Image (cartoon, rainbow, N blue to C red; front, top):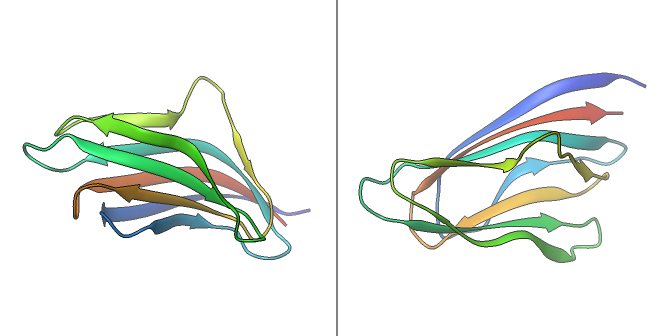
Amino acid sequence: MPTVFKHSLVTEIGTSPTDVVEIGAGVRATVIGCNLANITEYDTVVADIQIVGADTTVAYYVKSLAIPPKTAVKIITQGEKLILPESTSLRVTTNTANSIDAVVSYVEIS
């Protein structure tokens, strides 16, 4: 079973739902780090983080997280891990256009 360390860098996430990690068929992943940075100068941004299941069910992982301007928050902390089975994704949406950069570290197992 190959194990591959990966990362995803997605910039200027805004009001359209954006999949920051997509896990393909026959693969599963463990998210070991997730950082969201508010890149705006003056706006507090409200972000939602969702998991999209293989059956297209969408569930909130974090809802209405306020991120002050020019700051960042870690969503996965203190050894916590998020397991993503095959054909799932991690999605970010905010209330402000082009406002968040996301960095996600994960281990992919196939």
